[in-house]
Length: 234
Image 1 (cartoon, rainbow, N blue to C red):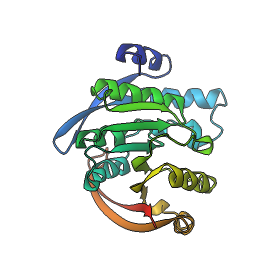
Image 2 (tube, rainbow, N blue to C red):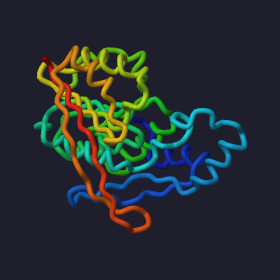
Image 3 (spheres, helix red, strand yellow):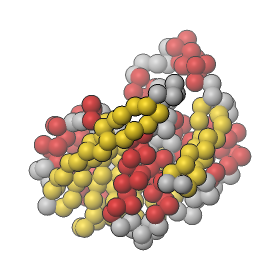
């Protein structure tokens, strides 16, 4: 990660108006880059006919998803100190940023979207975590197998496209350390039973649920339920 924070923000400013927002994670503050001109950006996508696939074209990666908060905190229950972690579909890198506080030796924070990568790099720089976290582009469909396997592979809300199930499972099968685990967090409403069936052919699969209370932008309390899918070696 050679670019300075100022250089990254200059590149981001060509498309987005942004600010850093403070988020407290277990009483530890993080600063996360947020988009101020979302409406204008969406209008530009519409007027230029650039909004063809909402899942890919909308900047969903910039949002602080509660599911990522849940997954980031969950990492600490897997004895992370001294271990290597890979985050898939990282978006702004929230899971990696949270997990870095738990003593991991190294984290690879990855996404396929170039804007998401810029935001994640800026967040890593802003929070002074560049010695622990590397951020880079990663396509699960053409993923190289790492020289050193990962002890933990984590992904929040990436099980939304069935065509990704096989590439994800093939990669995890080759990239996960012998005693490692892969953690997938998904909103319960988007739980994918087909992924579970495929995963059970290669791994021991455990599924659990975590309920979370949060406050929405209107100040109202909301309750959400998240599914945690854990893959370990059979």
